[in-house]
Image 1 (cartoon, helix red, strand yellow):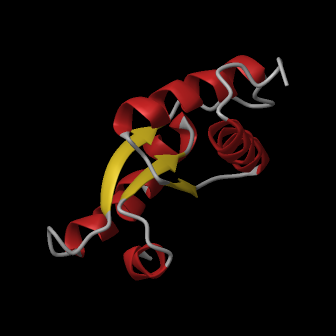
Image 2 (cartoon, helix red, strand yellow; image 1 turned 30 degrees about the vertical axis):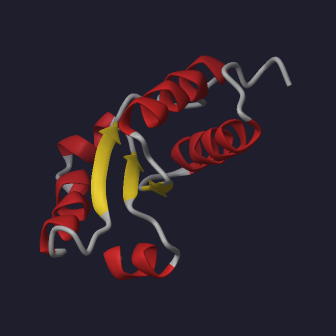
Length: 105
């Protein structure tokens, strides 16, 4: 997986998921794949955002956008179901458009 991100030119990947998958150990397994990359070659895991709620609303997207900016993420990896995927799509859109609040646009 890190090789795929490297091929896209990503350097800092933000993993988005939920607490259920964290508790199930899935997030840790996916995150550990980034430990296999050689530092300096990248990409590195910039952070993990786990506060995606079921039927996530705009505030969840806004929180994830803030976190992505704080971490300097240049790529997103969604691990989970519909809410996680929808949140990641909202984050991508907000970052691309430079939005602070997804509801304003």
